[in-house]
Amino acid sequence: MLLKYIVLRISDFIDNREKVVIPAEKPYITLSGTQASNTFLIWSDGEDILESPTLTIFASDFVCRFLTIQNKFGTAGRAVALRVAADKAAFYGCVITSYQDTLLDDNGNHYFKNCYIEGATDFICGSASSLYEVKVSFTLVVAE
Image 1 (cartoon, helix red, strand yellow):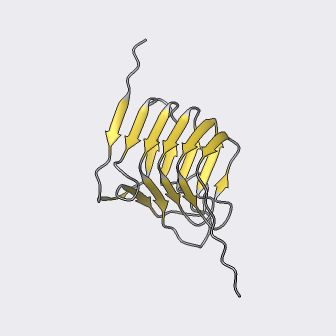
Image 2: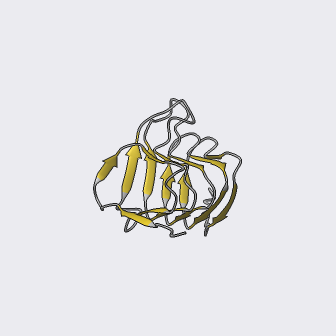
């Protein structure tokens, strides 16, 4: 069986405002930016946890590199930036931001390396088996 790997390079400094779904019948896709601070995928949808994601992955063997995935719905309710509902997905150097339920790590086995995930409420949710490999530093400010 010949495997077809597809790499989609996303241009820098373009405000990609769209909802993206990678269907189950399209495995072996890579979305690649040059660096997360320059490459954006942005949407604004909320309330329904399964319908609001900016990026939804149903396909196995998916890779995402150096991309900011953002849901700008605001503070009115659930606003998923990334939903991963497939096996064998990996994310490298990505920034994933929203307010509530930022990352719906739905099901499957996933790997996140050097990713920044931000949200105010339940920012990582779901029942997947995932490994998060990150460097974390904290600054403690003490009032005198």
